[in-house]
Amino acid sequence: MFDTLTDKFSSVFRNLSGKGRISEENIRESMREVRVALLEADVNLKVVNDFCEQVVQKAVGQEVIKSLQPAQLMVKIVNDELVNLMGPVDTQIYTVTPGPTVIMMCGLQGSGKTTTCGKLALYLKAKGHNPMLAAVDLQRPAAVQQLRTLAEQTDVPIYADDTKVAPHGEVARGAAVSVARAAVNKARELGRDILILDTAGRLAIDQELMDELKDVNEAVKPHQIFLVLDSMTGQDAVNSAKAFNEKLELDGLILTKFDSDTRGGALLSAKMVTGKPVKFLGVGEKLDRLEEFRPEGVASRILGMGDIVGLVEAAHDKFDMEQQTKLAEKMEKGEFTLDDFMSQMGQIKKLGPMGKVLGMIPGMSELAKQANMNGEGVEGHMGRMQAIYNSMNRRERKKPDMVDAPRRRRIARGAGVEVNEVGQFLKQFDMSRSMMRAVGGMNMFSRMKMMKGLMSGDLGAIAQPGTNMLRTKRSGWQEPKDRNKKKKKR
Image 1 (cartoon, rainbow, N blue to C red):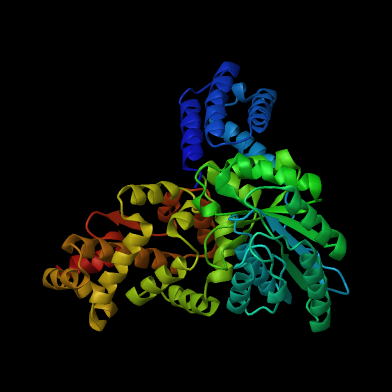
Image 2: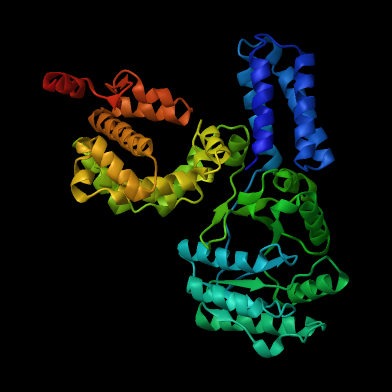
């Protein structure tokens, strides 16, 4: 995600940091490179020009050229301008009393509109609301059935009338209005506080589509209108949003397929071109893959600095908190087993694609890129770790230090991997175990110091004074007392 932009920004900042002191000409030259990268990412031309000029003006105005650390100040200015470009954003969905609050979903065919209706229903349900879906897309033959399937998967009631579906080639304009009205009445009758209308789409914007949407809008007077856009279509998505907004007063945009968008042109252009904020991002096929849009997090990831806040929020939603509490208690006692290690790996996988998760950790986006370049990907590497773990017997899992060369060969055969991969797996566990012991033995000040280092991308902070950790070639991270024990055994 944003690989090209991230690489270009990293290159620009590297060049600036190597100059010591920089001139206004250096800044303008760097922004010319950024301008080309943004245009290649399919960002709107006016947006690109305004953004680059704004950065130059702020950099000169804040006397970057006189700063002792000009590259760092440039990073801050670019980060702030990226946030301004995409924000501010209010992702809260305001409800009315008495209900239902009506949300009208619009979009072209293939944008992921119907699936997003299901995702939004699940999101609202998790927030404590009682949503209901309504199949108002009577143009596409399978739309009603698709929404009905999504309603079953999310355990949300649906209002649908199959008899109103338009025959192939005909327009269901009047029927859409009657179904929308009936859905509002049904939601009120059932006491649902939010009603999500899945309206008809087209392969392209046409007058019939707009007339139908205007009719539904006038009939039920939705409290919020969201437009669903395919982020991979770049400026085409932004142009569609502009056309929709001229006919309907949009309240926000939802960008789908964001996890597959390597350019980011639609996201960076949408707010400035349409004047409407991006509210949510679709980041995967599963129904729980709908995220609130945070400009700060996206800007930070574009600049290769991760998104630690977004990661913490995702972990809070996905992790088994009871299991995490038990692990924290074990850490306090300095206990961490191979079973705990693999359990943590399983918890991390719940956060979504591992490439995305690593991209949210400061300093780890490069690791994800390297794993993908090796052809295996992060998921593939974790799958091999799981195979090695499964190939070990109960005793070996409990006491991994007993795994000698013959056992490693047997485990490797059972897992279908090379023997050295078993060694690497055990080394990774040994490092994690030592780290967990160190964290468990820290006082509050030392823990805060380590977390500060992690959040700034300084992974070396784990080995700062107070953590009592040393690095050895043979077995990764070890505490001095463990090293002394091994010396005595020899």
